[in-house]
Length: 140
Image (cartoon, rainbow, N blue to C red; front, side, top):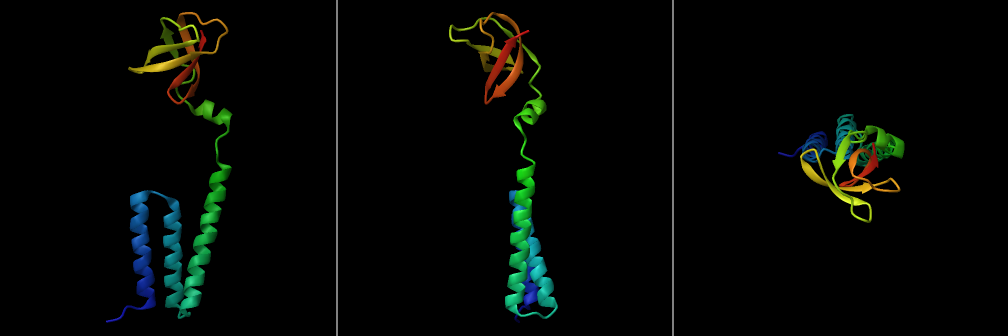
């Protein structure tokens, strides 16, 4: 028993949907929707070339639109600093090395710290930035 073009497109759309669920990317979801569109075009009786073309055009255009939308939502440096929950919190620095670095206890773990003040001094400091696992500190 041979499967119809409509069934084959629906099977492809389902497999792509399963792949999307395992990876969590919207791109595969959009390609899956393109395959579903190919199924609809096949159901309407259009030839295979039109089915493939409509599925491909939908998938490519929707992926390009998603990529463009994601580019527009890139956080600026100010947004990154504003959204970092560590900034503004206080830490206690017992001793600075001569090069302005220290190890501090913060959130139950040891962190590298760098002093942004001209003269590092022990005491309570405020986190003003976070780069990787290094806290950037200023005297409070």
